[in-house]
Each structure stands twice: as C-alpha cells, then as structure tokens.
Image (cartoon, rainbow, N blue to C red):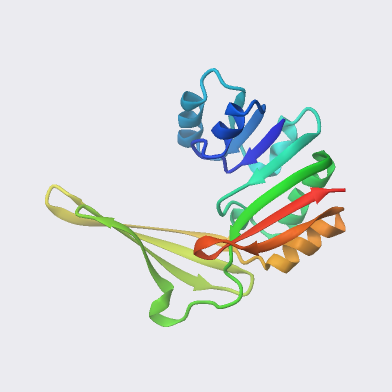
Length: 198
C-alpha cells in the first residue's frame, strides 16, 4: 500500500496503481480529487479529500511508500506540524519503507527588489505573476492574475503563506525518528528528500 499527499489529479498515483500498488491519494482540493477519481476508475486508488495531517485516519496498516511531492510540505501551518507529520510517517512506514518528499527551497537566498516578481504563466488572455514577501520562517506568496474577459483586463489577487524549510533541518528531524536517507537539489529550486525506515 502506498500513500500520496498533495495527490492532485494523479501524476504519481496513477503510475503506481498501474504497477499493481494499492494507493491512498490525499488532496485538500475537491476538484482535483474528483478528476483523480475519474482518471483512476477501475484502479486500486482510494482518492480522498482531506488534510495530510490527518492521513493516519486513512491508513489501516503500515505502508511501503509515502510520497509528498510538489511543494506540499511548505503549505503546512508551522514547523511543529511538519514534525508531527514526520512522526506519523515514521510510525506508519514498514521496516524498509521509503518516504519521498520534494519542496521548494525558500531559505538560502531570499530574492530582493524586483527579483521578487516572478512571471509564472501567460497567454493572450491571461498573465500570472507571483510576488514573494519573506519573513524569518515563512514566505508569503502573492498571486497577481490578469485575465481578459469581454475585451477588458481584470485583476485578481490572492496570497498564501509557505514555510521556509532548510533541507538539513528536514533530514535531521527525519533522522531523529529513525528515517535515514539523502537530500539533494532538483529542478526549478526544488529539494528532494528520500528517507528509509531502518
């Protein structure tokens, strides 16, 4: 059995299910969970809408693999929540089980000045730009979306807070729980952690 958090529409869940794994896929977005349920019809995927901090409620026995991909970890409310999550991972993994996580590295070099404005995506009707505002332990991401509708441009603004997690801190916390592994840099400022329960 595998558990995947921030499962989205099934980027990782579906390939695992095709290889014969039974998957519990958790995401907080009902729209994405609904899409995953449609795409996974007939496969051993239990897609649920929920909070990853509550994942033990969906697990009835130890699991072989837990995936937390994308930037899901940094969306948790605080570092205490990350530590609580890691403790549940260590408790629910089988011996030899693997925890894999990726998260964006917001720690070493906070962007300054105009570099804090990041073009994300654009086409003839939509322009999405992010603005980053750094705190000591967090970064606030402001999304600026310009959309053309009926020949006029409209602006929508939203913001959300993300944790700044140091990869060494993540590795140390997992190590304290008996999960040994490695960390490394991935593409586009993402960090990767692969830890095995001994």
